[in-house]
Image (tube, rainbow, N blue to C red):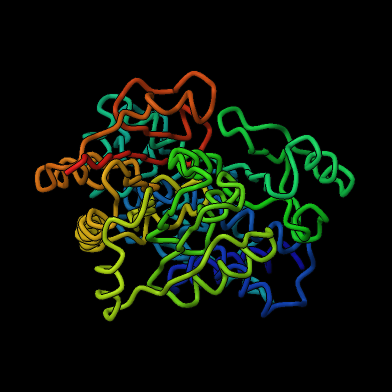
Length: 436
């Protein structure tokens, strides 16, 4: 493909992402699947340009609005990217936007003016809004400043750095050293993660599905922070555990491994499709101590019968997913205030649903991939106001017994962030039920 055609393809792909309700990576995969005439180099360059625009959406949009007073669209976002981030000048852009076959139509006089004014903007100026510099939606910025105070800009900016691929070694089948050797045989170089004891970090992205280690169930893709959250459940071999929001089964797999396939795990979710994916992963990993359960409006009787049945209830609560923006950068522009408020209601319902399921002396482990107090500390404080028979178990009290290392926090809760820990953003609260 000619450079002009790649630019038009990037414009089309940005438009497809903006108009789709599916994650940007899935939209991108479908976009390229429907255009099989594109070569691998074409796909890579189009994809790189598209993801660069997504990662710098706020400042590109700010430049467009500041220079021209117009709203960002697919075409002027690509223009802004080529001007601001790639350093192209008007004459170069006119050669690319020439209206020839498969090329973008020629620049209008207004677009030429937009480009000329954008080249004069200084993005290093101190008056660049903090939320723009941090690549954060304006409405979310007060939430981050409440969570992080003066270091909010630094913390949120770290969410724009591309995330590495983390793997969890399945200790039911292997160990880190053996998994690294097997991955290396397929050309995949991995190093040990710094906090999670069974984690690996890939140096480069690779088609993992083609490796023997993955197909044989020796490794699973799982962020280091997610691995830590699962291990802090502290599930023992004789325990009965409920994974209340199991989803695709990532944390269920980690629980089964930490329990050495003993005890019993019930993986619950409201989605039949997600649990179906989880069952496939459980089978590949060699897990046989887990059953699945769909939670629907008719599950009330089952839940009542399970009262005081579980040693641990893990809640991987649905949330804003602000901690995963490194992996899903367009997610930040999709999230609506009304959606976050609804998720907070669901979070409260989930901990209330979990409370009667726990045995006296048992624990609820509340986890989100959010960095916002409103979804984390505030939810736990609201829960403890209503449920006086639960207390906070400080993370540091069990960290050493689980990990055998120094705990990265002295706070009651654990908050992991890309800036401090190199993981996705995660929050973990451990709540212990008294002998009521």
